[in-house]
Amino acid sequence: MRTRVKICGITRAQDAVKAVEFGADAIGLVFYSKSPRAVSIDSARGIIQKIPPFVTVVGLFVDPSPKDVAAVLHRVSLDLLQFHGNELPSECSAYGKPYIKAIKVREGVDIAAEVNRYATARGVLLDTDDPKAPGGTGRVFDWSIIPKGLNKPIILAGGLTPENVWQAITKVRPFAVDVSSGVEADKGIKDMEKMAAFMRGVQSV
Image 1 (cartoon, rainbow, N blue to C red):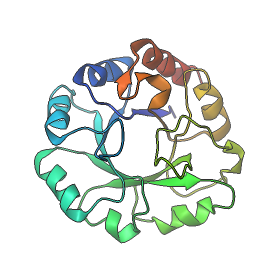
Image 2 (image 1 turned 90 degrees about the horizontal axis):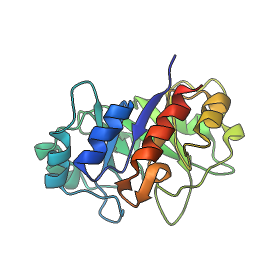
Image 3 (image 1 turned 90 degrees about the vertical axis):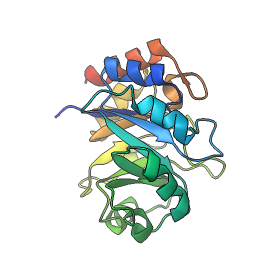
Image 4 (image 1 turned 30 degrees about the vertical axis):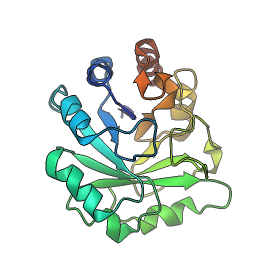
């Protein structure tokens, strides 16, 4: 089975269009005001208008208030929600939308228990834990600590680049990979050649 790809932290319509042209299955829009990759509701609507059918649009939230999520969903057509903070399972499933939950991986975290905890999630995203940033750190975690036989589709994130993505896929065999900073020219601005090279790396496995 081929590995799916999400390119996250999209802030410009032209970057979203090129990501899809290169073969991305999903794009991620960040609705977290403290992120350098955050988008406004109006910007998100403009980006989505350029997205062709059969591409999943994911909205990323970090410990949001229900009011904030509702405000986005009222005006933005999201296919999937991504929760990247300390949200409870009940909070993640409160919006009537499919969701994925990010698990911050560090030594001592019981990944299998966390996966089981979010039983209502469509999948779990494994990312590098960083107390200063909820994502987009550009840092890899130790892939060898991921247990085998997890009962949810695994989306691998954290420091993936065009140079190492083939190694990540070979070692972890995730359902999908998620990249943000690894294909950027600057924070929130994607590099066309890096995106193309990333997709070539995925497709080489």
